[in-house]
Length: 500
Ligand SMILES: CC(=O)N[C@H]1[C@@H](OP(=O)(O)OP(=O)(O)OC[C@H]2O[C@@H](n3ccc(=O)[nH]c3=O)[C@H](O)[C@@H]2O)O[C@H](CO)[C@@H](O)[C@@H]1O[C@H](C)C(=O)N[C@@H](C)C(=O)N[C@H](CCC(=O)O)C(=O)O
Picture 1 (tube, rainbow, N blue to C red):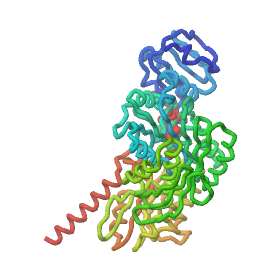
Picture 2: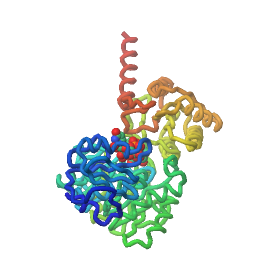
Picture 3: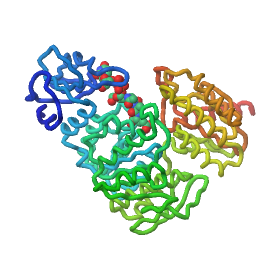
Picture 4: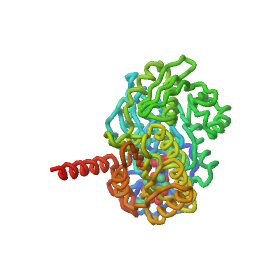
């Protein structure tokens, strides 16, 4: 495709060369440049992509997009734009033929609930014999098959990868794509040049303040999704920021559909019955009412499945199929997932890593815990001054909602794990909680299991579906479901060899 067509209508200055260059591929990482490709230099958080232009040219780049005044000592075209991350999204969308417009794309944003909402919607659409793609924390897939394009980010891919994934999906005959859209992605323009048919807002509670600085900034980042939607905006009316978003989008052309339990909503849950391992409720929609069974406990999953009912309603899917789709989701990896259960104890792994989600997970488990509620948790490294308030808040929640906390490492990255644990432990103690600090997360899990007695429930919070732990710059394998299985197997073999 000609460079001229890729950049047509964008605001740019030509530093050198001309626009009649045929572009064979696009890369934002110099190591992935191929002959005749376009290299987009990004000013990163850790390094400056402009430093790698020479490398990209060596590998055969025919043109380069920059956001700084740079002379390249080679026969390549160099264009300067205001923001190359934003430009990358636009040129990638053009290069792949605007693939998001070939899909019914549903984007889900919010602090918590993105993954489970995605899975409920996927299941509903599949009940309707649709071919569905998914992009999010648990990976990018068509049906249950992983996509060939890999992402470098945990949840929402960089725009180039995202557009390539949409193109792969369209080529594979995918009709609907359900995607988690993080605030990181929105503020870094990863989802720019993408058209979402439906946008969903689950909730907003404190998180990621290392990037967004204030809750208002965090909210504005999330709200960007609703500038990209064409047909429906589905918003949780029970969340304070949800109501703020409703006011913001009221004037938009897109149809607004609200959902909730407490406030009056277009899609509303009543008659909720909580059980230890599932929840039932009546969902009321303008198309009628239906009983919903969710195979997960707690109000979080009422909200997340209700958002999926709202999506089904907006997609013209009948309510029986919506109910069947939600019922068909038996478990979601790392979401209140019971990884071990016997007559003595229950061990649950959950992704809860924010104040709000930790409190909700513990409150959900409390009514169904006959013994003690034991919590294993840590607070992940967040650069700058925002680390401490989060550590304090998480410690306080642990003290208030768990009977005993084992404070351990999450992803300490390059921060001192002992220092994080000391701060969190001090907060647990200050709020009157009983605790023990154990740096090694596996040992912490072992300790919780060893101290557990009949009818205790152990919640291992923070990492959920993740299969690694980041300590320093090293990512080590860390699969909590497997670790629990290994510990329990070792205990069984120890106790049977003692009997012999
Ligand atoms: C904080 C953040 O968002 N970082 C993302 C950002 O990294 P960065 O700006 O630090 O990149 P960098 O390493 O400084 O490199 C700058 C540029 O130089 C290029 N480069 C670098 C080296 C080289 O040899 N050649 C070269 O060209 C890089 O490809 C890049 O284009 O841009 C990179 C390229 O797109 C991303 O991979 C990276 O995601 C990192 C891995 C990450 O962990 N991001 C997390 C925080 C994130 O985005 N998470 C959200 C979910 C949040 C949630 O809700 O929980 C997500 O949507 O995934």
